[in-house]
Amino acid sequence: MAGSLRPELNREFEELSQNKRILVEYVWIGGHGTDLRCKTKVMDKPISGPEDLPIWNYDGSSTKQAPGHDSEVLLKPVALFKDPFRNHGNVNYIALCATYKPEEDGGMSPLTVTEDITTQGGVTGNNTRDAALAIFENPVVKEQEMWFGLEQEYTLFDKDKVTPLGWPRGGFPGPQGPYYCSAGVDNAYGRDIAEAHLRACLYAGVKISGINAEVMPGQWEYQVGPCTGIDSGDHLIVSRYLMYRVCEKFGVYVTFEPKPIKGDWNGAGCHANFSSKDFRDPKLDFTYTPDNGPYKGQELKGAWGKMIEALEK
Image (cartoon, rainbow, N blue to C red):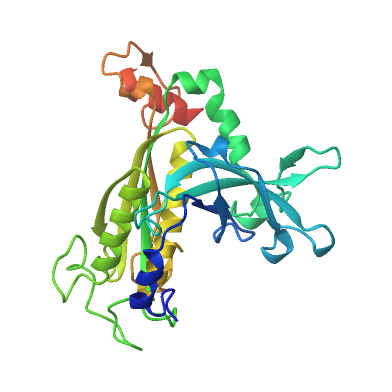
């Protein structure tokens, strides 16, 4: 069933007063590394940033992030966004949270579900944000003002999770070609969802910068960025959460899987564009001559030389 079983009945409740209380949806990455979990906290005081929110907890044994005999996992809000789904005359929030394991001395440590994440292909329910933040806060890294632009592709399916949106049930549409950046009922399937998600991101404060239909019918893309440092990951995760919530309302299944349909059909990726302050400086005084590779012996200047040097290292 769709997330909103009777949308017309929801409206009368959405218009009720919150009596000056604030709703905050705590959002975190679950044990599969691709699932996003959430629950609501009601607050009685104004909120200006994640530091105004208390640390909360949840049952990690129900998300595959803790054993049943020791299941408490802590949630620490790290980034705050406006909630586009609870905006009827009130400003409510979405708080992206990092996950921690409580320690016996009263402290907490970043949650570790899988010791060796290479066994999971790097996709895990671990708290990897703390380690990333430490890198981005390193003075050498921070001085370079690392920019990221992320191109998140996704695929929409009917609720059977088998039939991509717009495809004939049990069959195939026409060959790829007319669907990329398309318009028209015969080519663009799911525009309402892409547009609703765009609006939700804009309201929330996610740094979304564009959308387009993709090569495979039922597949779309949106872009997040440019973001600096840790914001790139924070905004991407919240953008995915908003997509799940939008599709919940439409009764449509969405996946970010890289190859949801086998055969000669385009996959869905998340291309990452990156630059540093040096790379963006057209007057960078730098020269590099590679000893090996396709540019061996060539004098490469400026940002191009800097990039090749970094890649070779």
